[in-house]
Length: 98
Image 1 (cartoon, one colour):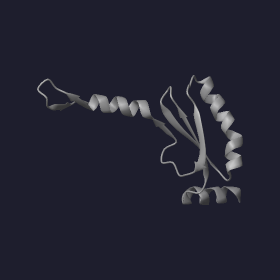
Image 2 (image 1 turned 120 degrees about the vertical axis):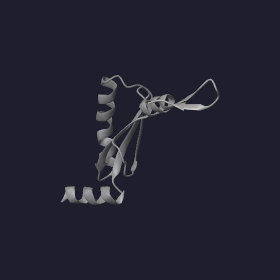
Image 3 (image 1 turned 90 degrees about the horizontal axis):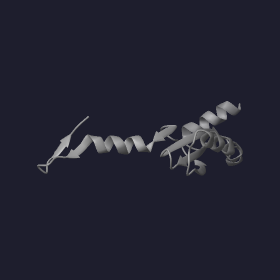
C-alpha cells in the first residue's frame, strides 16, 4: 500500500524529496521519493555522509515537495560544455567547436 501511495504522490508532484547541492563538485542530487517531510529529514544525514566520504564540499540540503526530472545534475559539465561549444574567433565572429 505504501508503494502505491508513493507512486501516486510522485506522479502528482506531491512526494517529498531531499535536494542536496554541493559546491565541489558542482552538482545537485535528488533523493526520494518520500511520503513525509519527516521521513526525508531522517534519511538526509546518510546521504550527506556518503557525499562527504566521496570528497564533496560545500553541501547544502533542502527538503520539499517536487518532481525532479533528473536525479543528478552535473552543473560543472554543463558550464564546461557551453564554454567549448562557442568560442569567439579573432575575426569577432563566433565559431562553434564540438
